[in-house]
Length: 115
Length: 109
Image (cartoon, rainbow over all chains, first blue to last red; front, side):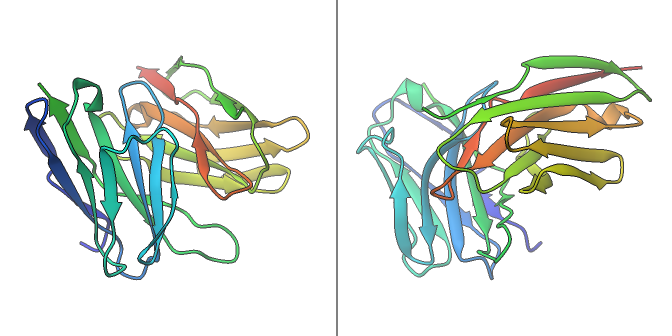
């Protein structure tokens, strides 16, 4: 399978715990995005990387959220001191910057439930 | 602010045609995407429009009018498997995707 993969697919945690999610993009893609999606809403942009550089981070993102892409390949998203409001689907997408447009390919998502 | 509007839900009959509208107000425009998302799954790409006019791809077509800030997705010969949410997203001046909340399409036999 050469698509975008995410791990874990589901995570249940207690409020106050830290969680970390992993995303493996399509191998030749240089851009990697993190989104959060709640029921009945479209994806909400969190942050994105071009290679290993984090180029933009949403102003809505609290300092409890941090993302890395150390070698320009896989990425991790960590949420510290989770809150019930963090419960959502966390989506990762990757793309290859091209001359025309960069279609984003999404992974299956990690569904986080904070009790 | 940036805003993308789509109807929340639509219902159509198997075999029929449905048009899902999207209006947008964004800081700049570098193209408009339509994605399909089945319940519990990730969005999958359907179409991209950057110039005015109609793009046809099989049973699905997408139209764009940049002057009106308007797009629609046209689905023909509806099948039960087309039941899904359809998301409109605009690539703004910073090349960020701004997403609508999606239109839930219900297909009835």
